[in-house]
Length: 289
Image (cartoon, rainbow, N blue to C red):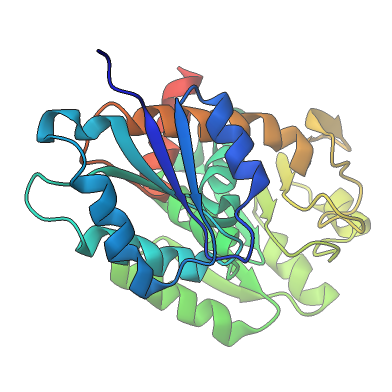
């Protein structure tokens, strides 16, 4: 008798995400167990329930997905999940709280289709948000020279210190973008810009976007008007506007969904996988080849 593929969804929100549940079901699992309002102190019991119900050879057929809207809480839940494991008795786990990992991976992959990121200067607007942080991480791993931007300089200074401490990266610079003049300066020499801000906040006005002479790719991850980059449509998918290849949030969304499903399927290939931003990105790259 074949083992059923069981995915356990841990969600810190008051209601477990319907979006994540639908994607999980579309990813050809057999059973989905959803837990909502999950606190750090709840995790060990839930994880042990997954670990001790199957023998070591069958544990690859049980996996955990960490969702929810708060990425910081999701990261803490991942730590709690990993601390509950011991030796070979563990199950694979995917972190994609608020879609941060799959969205960041899809954005960087979209950019890589049009420029050699190892030779590119890339500006990440609203870099201190959960998606922006992951975009910056993935870009640096691709060898890009990354400018992380925020309207508050201290926030990106703190982020650079955090990223450098984590991965010893020296290809990150910071800039403040609280005025038109600062935005213009941030865009100088940039071939790719990725806007990863909150819904309904314009980070790059159309006139500055149009006037950026060296810009080749613009990616806006905000689907709620006003969009993050003026002049880019949410539906854009490799659409040329003013000589720039543009992607909107929905245009990136197709790749994000493919990565999300592939990552869930990957969980069931072994019992010891931990899929965070870099691992999710590698899965996305494999889909492009």
